[in-house]
Length: 399
Ligand SMILES: Cc1cc2nc3c(=O)[nH]c(=O)nc-3n(C[C@H](O)[C@H](O)[C@H](O)COP(=O)(O)O)c2cc1C
Image (cartoon, rainbow, N blue to C red; front, top):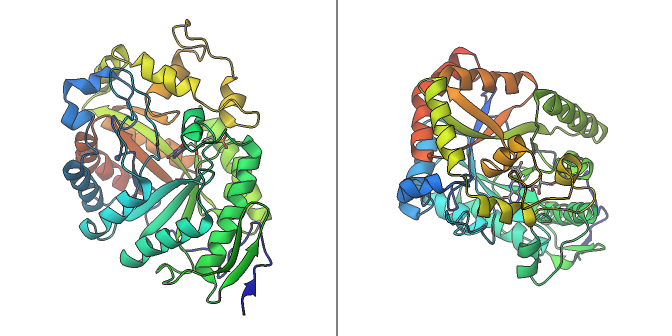
């Protein structure tokens, strides 16, 4: 007898939420290691391609993830990209797949959390991701997690799947049903009948179950009102972006209020793009170099393909009119540079003291984890080990 899935929307946490705490007040994630240039849209990467552009090649990618694990990073997150943005740097033109790369990291790491990022609207069925994710979680001893994104921003990527972008807010309704169905499949020992508006599964079952109890960790990175509501209903982590510390504070309050309403816990995190050196002046010299070589073509490709649908946080922050002839494409210098370096991430630029202080400031407004991305990941991770993590320990942010 199949079990009727009588809940089709979040909040839905059969068996409760998984424990996500590592014991460090500020947790560390390693971001965007799986694609060409990472998050640096600059021709500067061409000065040393194996190190600055092609670190996603498997030998260096393994080394970087092992290094992140050895110095105490809690987890890695790939950037899910189906089509790059070209330009002279070949920005994001090569990208390792989000599920295969997590699976491939299992035997070469032992404690690192292994996330995948899925665009739920790109024609997956929840059973595909529930099954593949359960397998990676099973073989890794409970280390797999999923970053759920709705996949709206990129018109060209949608076209690659033979479709037009979904309405911004409807994409989150689709994601809500998708994740509810996945949670049923992970939780139920009996086959389920799930009859939703967007997804149906008759006699659906996943065996073996994921190893982590009650299920794998889920994160989301939507910052629009609808995105925050989705995170509050379903996820354990939410990745927020803010232009100021006050904006972070507001977002964190909003998420906490929503999560309380749903009687859930959602931990706020953010992504940071890091350029650091011995002194502020030396870090600034690197930033000046990256900026002077900025890959305008690649940035334009990103901006022109970006989400213009009503409801998206990008449109509410920056409008939907972009101008190729404006030096900053109509975004203003600061936002242009934030887009080119880190796709809107918080910029941590400076000497080690400055960077550690900025991390403390983020933690003080409520950020519990930072997802770090470096223009030179090998150097960046070593700097974290030698110069930043020791300072964070003194601040009581790391054990
Ligand atoms: C930490 C982080 C990771 C993200 N990863 C991806 C990704 O891998 N692929 C992608 O297409 N979008 C990614 N995004 C973009 C978001 O999924 C989302 O499109 C964006 O936040 C806009 O959604 P909103 O309008 O609800 O705010 C990421 C955003 C953040 C902050």
